[in-house]
Length: 275
Image (spheres, rainbow, N blue to C red):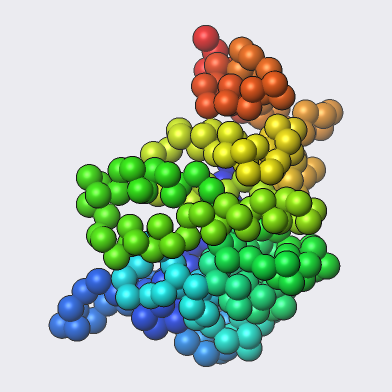
């Protein structure tokens, strides 16, 4: 299988994107990562680390696939975010913030997160803040197409379809702006929203919305490796690195869509697919 860095339950506020909001009040359910206030947030980080989390993820704003949350609404105070980041650093863990809304994005950057996941409603100030602090932006710009095309037949509620419509075009504009301004943009998929194996479709969208083919490939290899702190192991073909390699028949620098149909897969020097 793939090399993975996993977060465990995402931290979030009561009733927020990382909570379970679809149930009747007779069900005393809450998300496994729900933590309100700085000390509760620290405790949850410690708990996640205890059970093997490689990094911390928290919900800084509302999201698309939750009930009753506004996509861009900020959901943690700066103090809470700073506590999450500080505790994670104590345990030598990196921090990813789910954030669509611009205010939540800025708070998360100020708190010191390593990456902003989704980053849908960016403005120039937020991008500049990210550039100054070395923050990575992970914009998943393919999944809107899949959700709007297949969401209804897959049983996605109308509320969530409408929120996807709200996000989609704006997120692509943010992607274009971030690339143009020179921010660190990584290849993000929002894994699980669409079928695994379709990930390669995002390469063509990355090029369509501002990257060169080489930049798109680097966003999924060397730049992503840097974000994870794995740049000494993966992300490049070089002596001393894991031999994790994919190959296609055509030249992706000429036609980036070649990466949607991979012919050869090697992981750690072992061939898993060759045709």
